[in-house]
Length: 253
Image (cartoon, rainbow, N blue to C red; front, side):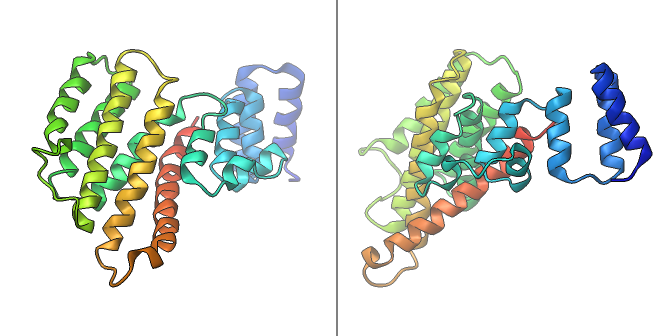
């Protein structure tokens, strides 16, 4: 990058370390069309991007984040089991887990749109967790009421779906996923972030089951023969949904 303005701003930032000079450097990097990895490194150096967020983006598989760190892809980004991958996303802090739960709830909400249950439960649980993540002060009674509303659809005596056939099983698994998301809401309302890891993992595993059975409804013959393929496809959809929601947050200013 043979741009004198950029070189000048880099020199001044190194000399002063002043926040305003850091901001100028970032503007000049963007103007000069610097590679994304270079911009990410500068954002960390200037202090507008926590290194933990950059490392999270690398765990999510972002190539520019991995290049900016100058390290090979972390092992957590390469794990086959999606629930283990989700667990690993908290290596640099628990903040990702509630967002994982929301991402998966939205994925399932779209998959089961118009089906009650689980679509309304998923929407309400995701809305509640998003509100808490945005700093809204909700009492713990709000997610508890949501859990109470879901309870009949999880009770063998009162549930409205028949889990003995694939689509019913899919809807049942998705309802259990919605319950796990609501449990994330309870923990957030109580001010507990670290314990959301377990609920996020439950959301993940239930979502994979729900997506497998949703596709199984169209399968003829022995489901066991295609189970592994259906699981791979379901896990790929979950990973994509999580990446789609977490990467903009991780790399945001």
